[in-house]
Every structure is written in C-alpha cells, then in structure tokens.
Image (cartoon, rainbow, N blue to C red; front, side, top):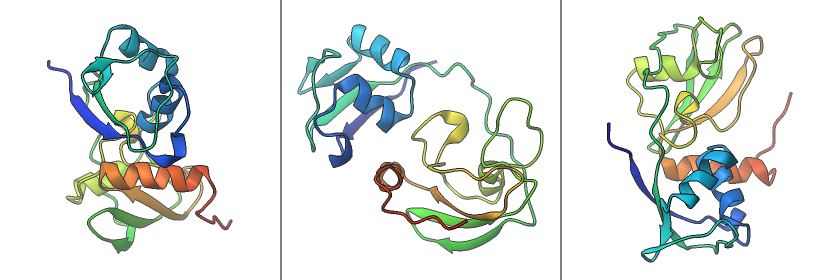
Length: 173
C-alpha cells in the first residue's frame, strides 16, 4: 500500500513551536510517530528535510509523507435515525448527538458513532487526525447528548482544532 503525501501550511496557532510538537497537534499523530517521520526524512520544507529541533513559522509550507496506517479497517457504517443535522455547509456539519452514540469508533465500542452515521448518510468527512477519529475536533461521551461540530474538510479541521485550543468556541453544559 502506498503512503499518503500531504502538503500543509503551518497555521498561526503553532507558529514558533518545534516541528515535532507542532505536527503532533496539527496532524493528530503521536510525537513518536512524528519524530520517526522526521528522522526518516519524510517531513520537508522547500525540498529540505527538517530536523526535529527546528521551529515552524506561520504560513510555512510543509510536505509530509504520512505513515502507513496500521488499521486499514474502514470506519463502520452505523446509520442512526436519532442523529439530527442542525447545520450543514461545505466545510462543517453540526449534529445533535443522541445518548447511546459515541463520537467515533473506539476499542470495545460496538454501538453507533457520529462518524459512522454521517458517512452512512453520505457525508464526506475530513481525513485529518487519526483515521478512526476523522473530522472529530471535540467529543461528547456516548452517555451525553448535545451538539457536535464535525469537520468536512481538512481546512475546517485545522481551523476548528485551533479555535477549541484557544477557547474561541464557547461550550455550554
């Protein structure tokens, strides 16, 4: 299986950070995985392989040869009648997640998931972050109902992650 090549622009929220730390946050991969990619020369900028001690700048273009996915299983499709779409555009979808539905697949969980239900309903979800949590920038426990924002594009995923990180999005419980 071939590895995915991604080109990304460093967002403002991680400017000045070491490349290993910044990409851990942006790509949702473990620091160990990012360091291995750096050590293998799989992360570059302007055709030059980067070192893990280098710092990134806002707007810097990075080329990343993503690691081969260990889990090649697709996200289980879990159609769910109780999942209500509150808002939908080209970038995001906002759902009213019912109790008894997890945000994404997890070890030991066999019930429906927001991601599985959205994919089953024909929505395209961002591929940023870990494969099993594609598009998920925040979660609600399976036993909790409420609104969730799901990214449909990688651009929305990065923007939403940053907005949650700096608390620009207000959450009410």
